[in-house]
Amino acid sequence: MKTGIFLFVVTITVMISKFAVSQSAGPKLKVAHISILVHDYDQGLKYYTDVLGFEKKTDIKFGNERWITIAAPGEKGIEFVLVRAKDKEDSAIVGNQAGARTFAVLNTNDCKKVFADYKLKGIKVLTEPRETPWGVQAQFYDLYGNRFVLLEPNSISQNK
Image 1 (cartoon, rainbow, N blue to C red):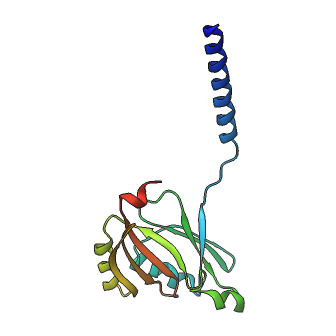
Image 2 (cartoon, rainbow, N blue to C red):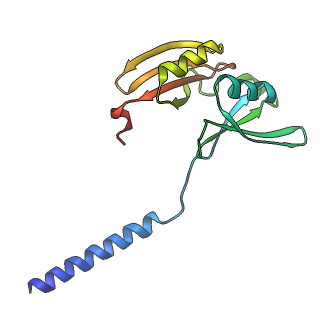
């Protein structure tokens, strides 16, 4: 009797495990690109690479448009796409894509050093680096007015 119950429990456990794996083996989603509206391709590219240290990943011309992607050095995941504002509606929200909120958080292993470098390159400072419950963070605006957070996460914020 005990052997029968044991085999039944093992069989049910294996079936549940296979079902769980089959459910998680479905279609995957991954954030690949986030658009940043810019007034001028070259101006935006120069700022994000020269001032913030991003790397140009792609720059393809097609007609009057360009597909320009940038990413943090060594980043293999999310890339920003620099998208030129085409009309009055686009132009009105350049630099205000997230309203009064943070547009993006950039993680680093040395917030104070990176922020000091950014300041030397002329970023618009919102807050200096300070200790928070989730790590050392500073805030700044890009050349268009989008708000960014530079974060050196601590162990609390890295526990997911």
